[in-house]
Length: 521
Ligand code: AHR
Image (cartoon, rainbow, N blue to C red; front, side, top):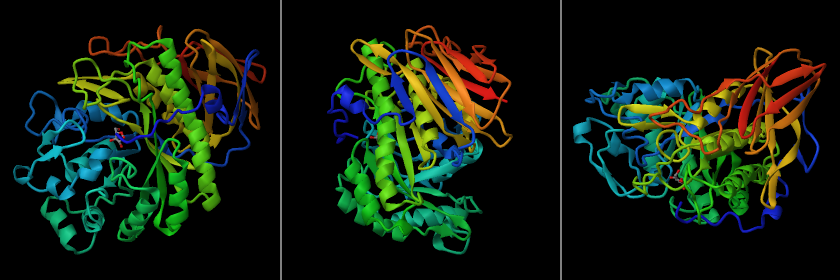
């Protein structure tokens, strides 16, 4: 991450061109949405709603894992029960681990076997802290089983070998007789875990080895050759380390130079951050909020342009775009270790989450997996812990409200939005996405990023008719509002009564700075 290129060289007006294909922005007039209920063809993969947990700060140690001997914090084999219970309510589909930058320093064999015999390691990326390796492969896969989530393991390409990586896959997945499967059994796990998702390094252009795209494409080919596309009947996904934000050359080279038989996904990382001026997570100005929204909305342009490159090489859309790091990134909380990336989470983060998930839903044909960075105590976390205390953040609530879209049929929407203006700049105020679930129920998620004005939205439907509407809303008095350990429920979803049918039209009053999810029957 230290080598990231600046992402916003262009003036605002230029950067906004190409945003929101389904969203026409108007200066005056009405917000209007059409749900094309007869045009659905792509499923919104539940894996778009994945999470990311790195050995970084208090994410793993203290966040998830408190050790088997801990009598103060209830745990199952060392894993916090309160965190697992909260995450289960999100139905989190997959969890990426062990990094991030950490992944390309991690040697998995140091993290298995009797804990007393595991060597310690220095976490050189994140504060130079010494870790005792008590949380390794078995503990992570136990966590995934407790959560009911699929593991997504990122292997060490930057400082590891092809053999080390291939042996990790064998250790986790091989059912037959081999030294690796025998070792797994000796360590207490008879049956393979059948891990499907494997990342081939992380940010190879930066902390993963400072490689060029051309060099990494060759390195990738070598690694992927020794990671089979399937074990028995279980297909594997090999996911290439992807571009940072606007690095379209990276995607172009990978799509061109890697045989597609070796490639199931290409990653993309994009944070809603001004690297030169991150700002406080809770004490931010309107201008700083606007800037965050601009960078969050840029995801639309990024997905479109990376997907357009992929379409040229892969018109059948076999290779998935995997946005395996996204979210807001601010200054750390005062008094906390600057390397631990611990930040609070406000209604601004709820806006990032709602906007971004709408974009992913609307591009379900190509974006088939994504991972919010990060789950607990790091960056845009859904959970914060303080010793035995735990709270869920506004972002958690958005993830929970949007869970209705998991594996549902995406219904394309056309959005015409009025503008949210801050000073002399403006952005579309309203965004949305819709889907129909397996029970035939339609869900429409709407976001109003305007901090000062409610927005009336008229919703028309094509190809279906509905007569009843219910919903939930997440909003708060101020965009800076957040949950604290003393007031953990200040921001939480409530019943929404601002939507009414008038004949076939649905009229919705979105409060300022709100996320609304409607159920239409
Ligand atoms: O999520 C924090 C860091 O951001 C990750 O380790 C890295 O991949 C990215 O730069």
